[in-house]
Length: 262
Image (cartoon, rainbow, N blue to C red):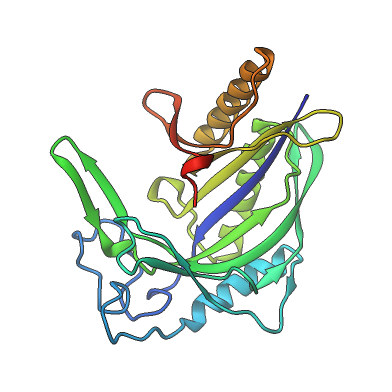
């Protein structure tokens, strides 16, 4: 059985203002809910205006990865209901993204590896949930902050390869000056999809959401692979499950199963 891993990387673009409104994009250390307006809160009558600088920075990433920039791209509303999304939808690019294809070559133990890029698109970030003993608080400062999402093909074959790919990508992003890519600030984070292939046939994937450190990526993927191996070793099937990663406890936490996904 061979591990098959694909990543969805979210990169906060280095703009002065948000993607569709004039609110300041640098929300780190700002007082909660101090960087909001009717546009990023989705209040009635507020109309978005696209940030030209965000598009230029995303194009810079696409060209550096050798992606094919589309002459026409469009934004879509991705509808879902969650407390950190005040509009009830996220503005993203689903059907006509900014660019398709491309690749990134990096090294593992001195040996070159190339990972293909499936697509690259622009989208807005959601707010942030802050969990405390007294309850859960919501900070909307991050709503509307511009992101470029880079989706890879499932070309990675080990947790370590995934970690080294992310290191190489962060170096590129910083060199291009499109993002500070500080993972501890949430400026570079990723979701990972992993499965075990048998005789070239892909297995059922397990998804891990919001990984925000190189160590978390490697450890969470290793744990997900172990989870799948244990189930298959017992003769069970692998269910399509979405996990989070508890860094403090060093373990996967189930967020939802296939039946709960929409």
